[in-house]
Length: 305
Ligand code: ZN
Image 1 (cartoon, helix red, strand yellow):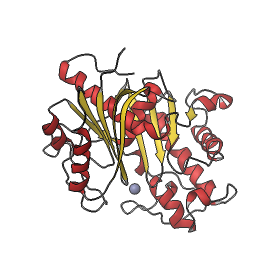
Image 2 (cartoon, protein in one colour):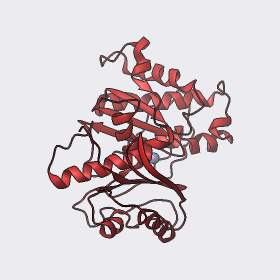
Image 3 (cartoon, protein in one colour):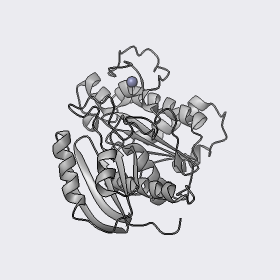
């Protein structure tokens, strides 16, 4: 894809919405931030923003999850079983697609960020990558051949069950699984366990050992299943905790035991990397979701990276 058309992109987050009118990171014509409140108020505010724009060929929405992404499903485009009050069952994509009448893409915020990092960011030029966000929860976007890996639904690798750190029997914080990955290593889990928000926890706190070990298990699983050529790791827990990257890489390599021919330890810097697009990854991902919807509607090649 040589040129990206002008697209209206919406990153629908748990606390705020970012709407951008853009065709790429260097061509953002407008960027508006809206608080995420009650569903109808939020959707109305999004529409008031987009109503002011013109000339966009498609719409892309990168949303907090879980969401329905199966176009054949009756609830396609809806938020599904979210703990966020009032949002379960809200139709996001259908409402906006009907209002604007342009091809509309809809996927998770983490898949959006993965697409954006693969196109313009820390994994630019690679068609097979994974993006991991470690924040309040843990989300993973897997991209293969330039497309999100979709099936029954979107990937939910944040809820795998890692091998436990030796001697650790804490019950974990996930309401569904207890000590799944998110229940052990997310920002919420860390805060629930030690009573201190993750960013305030000193690098030598023993809780980090278990966190790095659990995230190393995630990367082990990712390497063996999504077979990404690079893994981008972002989110609130990864920002400002530079000590975590080398520990997670080491845990991954130790766990894999040399089974997969990865870049060697000294090159691990190029395999497990921080994001490059910062706060624009989500909204730029929404732009790419719009581009993919446009390509699907016109039958042109589907690969975007
Ligand atoms: Zn879970």
